[in-house]
Length: 213
Length: 256
Image (tube, rainbow over all chains, first blue to last red):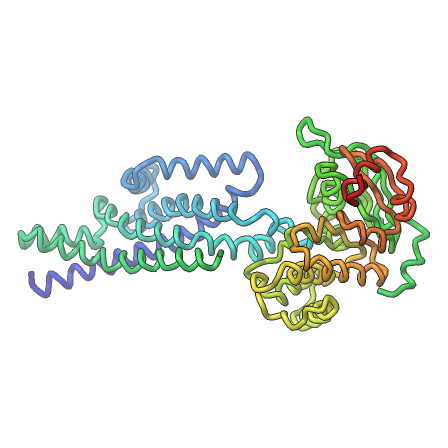
C-alpha cells in the first residue's frame, strides 16, 4: 500500500472523527433534554420519553440510519449523506445518553433535591447548580464508554455511502486487492481512537470509587 | 436577631396549621393537626418513630404535600402554586438529619448559592453574609473545605449557617443530632441554643430531652399522626397527662 492510499484512509479517519464529534456533541445536548424530560415528574412526558428511548435502544443503529436516510427522502426532505448520518447518530446518541443520565440523575441522593428546595432554589438552579454537577460525575465512566461505542458505530455510515474510515478502507481494498492489510490498518486506527478512551473511562471509574469512600 | 422581636408575638402567629391531614395512599400520616407558633417561640416536637413529626414539619415548607387543612407561614397561605411555595421556603430555613450539604461545593459556596440565586445578592454580598454566619456557628476557618473533609458535627453547623444565610424568619430542625456521633451532639445543640437565645422562631423534631427542657417554650408530643399533648417543659416532664406520653417519657428518659 502506497502513500496515496494511506492518505486517503486518513481523510476517511478525519470524517470518522468529525462525525463522532458532531454526533456526540449534538447527542449530548439532545440527550440532556431527554434525561430532563425523563425525570420531569410529569407522567405523560416521562412515558413518551421512555418510549423514545426504547425505540432507539430496541432497534439496530443500521436500521435507524436507513430510516433517516431513505425515510426522510421519501417524505420530501432531501439530505446529503453527511447530514443524514449526523441526524441519525445524534438521535441514537440522544436516546442512549438520555438513559445513562436519567440513571445518574436518579442516583443523586433525594436529600440533595430536598435541601435545594428547602433553600427555595427553583427547578433550573436545582438542576444546574445541585443535581447535574453530581449526576455528571456519576455518569462519566458510562458516558465515555458510550462515546467509544459511538465512534465504532459511525462505521455503519459507510453503508449509506458516506466516506468515513470504513468506506475509505473498502474503496482502497477494492483498488489494491489487499483487504487484510487495508482493514488491518483501518482496525488499528479505530483502536488508536477507542483504546485511550476506554483506559480513560476505567481511570475515571477508579477515581470516583476512591472519591466516594 | 434582637431580643426585642421575641416580645412581639401579638398579632398573628408565625406559623399556623389548622386541620392538616396527610395520607400516603390509604395510610393516614397526619390527622387534623392544629398548631400555632408565635414569633420567637421555640417548639420541640417529639414522639415515637413513625408518629408523623418529621412529616409535619416537612409539610410546613411543602417538602411534603398535604391533602387537608391549611398552613399559614408569615401571613402567607401555603397553597400549591410554585410561587407561593418558594415564597414560604424563603422565610423558613430547614436543617436535615443527614445534613444534605452539597458535596461538590465548598462550605462557603454551599452558603452562598441560595442567597445569590433566589435573593439576588451579588457575590461579595453573599460571601460577606456567608462568612459572618460561618463565624457565628464557629466554623469560619473551614470555609474553603469540602463537606466530606468535615466531621458530622461541623457539617451540621455548616448546614445551620447555610439555612441562616437566607435570613429566615423561622427554622425547622428535623432530628438534627440523630445522625451524629455522641461526642458531636453537644456542639450542634450549643449552636441551636445560641440561635434560640437570639430569638429565632424554631420548631425542632428531636429526642434530646435535655435540649427540650432548656430551650423549648412548649413541647408537643405526637403519636400515630395526632398531637396527643402539648405543654411547657416543666409541666410536660413532671406531670404528663396521657398514658402514651408517660410511656414515651419512660422510654426516652430511661426510667421504667
